[in-house]
Amino acid sequence: MDKKHLKELKLKANTLRQDVISMLLAAGAGHTGGPLGMADVFANLYFNAAKHDPKNPRWDGRDRIVLSNGHICAILYASLAEAGYLPKDELKTFRKIDSRLQGHPARMDLPGIETSAGSLGQGIAVAVGMAIAAKLDGRDHTVFALMGDGELNEGSCWEAFLNAHKFKLDNLLVMVDRNDIQIDGYGHDVLPLEPLADKFKAFGFDVFQADGNDMQEVGKTTEKAMKTKNGRPRVILWKTVMGKGVDFMQNLPKWHGIPPNAEQAAEALKQLQAERARIEAEN
Image (tube, rainbow, N blue to C red; front, side, top):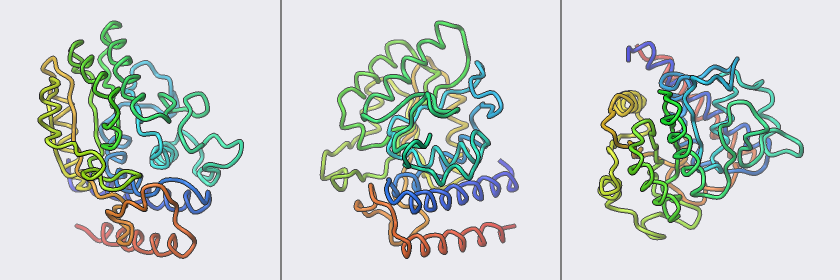
C-alpha cells in the first residue's frame, strides 16, 4: 500500500469515528467503544480490501461482509453511508422510530446489510452457510465474518468453526475484535479465552494476529490472509483499543454500551479533529 492510499484510509477511519460519535449523540443511545475500536478495520474493508458495489448492492460477485456482533452497527452504518449505500444525512436517524438504522442491523431494511444480527453467536453460523453456498455454486468471493471476542463465549460460535473446518471453507475470513472487553467487564475476568490463537489452530484455522488500530498492519494482514488459501478457514485476531481515538473512553468497559452526552461528544470530536489534522500533515 503506497503512502497516499494509506493516508486516505486513515482519513476514512477518522471520518467514520467522527460519524459514530455524532450518531450516538443524536440517538442518545447505543454502543460507543466497539465501533471506535473497529473503525480502522472497517475503513480497510470498505475502501480497500472487499469487492462491493453501492450502485448494485446485490451484485452476485460481491464479497459478503457479515457483522455477527450486531451491537457495533454504528460503524457498519457509518461505513455504508461513506461508501454511498445511503445518504449521510440519514445517519442522524440512528435508533429512531421508523429509521432504517436500528440498534441492530436488519437485512431487509437497508442495502449492503448481508444478515440481520442481534443474538450473539448467530451471525457466524450464517457466514459459514454463505461460504458453503459459495463453494457449492462455484463462486470465488470472500465471506468476511466480523465478531467480538466476548461473542466467543457462545458455544454456537465453536460449532460454526467446526463446520468451517469440515467443509474446508478457505473462502471464509473471520475477523475477531480482540479488545478483551465486554458488557460485564474485562473479558479475562468474565471468561478467559487465552490461548485463543491456539484454540483456533486446534479447530483447523489458519491464524493471523495484528494491531487492528495500525492501518498499515490492517491492510497488510488482511491482504496476506485473503491470499492464503490452504483448504482451511482463516481468522484474524485484531488487537484493538476499545474507544480508540478518544482518550477518556479507551479501554474502559463502561463505554461498551453507553453513548456520550453533549459535553463528552464535543470533547471526543475535538480530539478526533485534532487527529485528522495530524494525519493530513503527514508526508
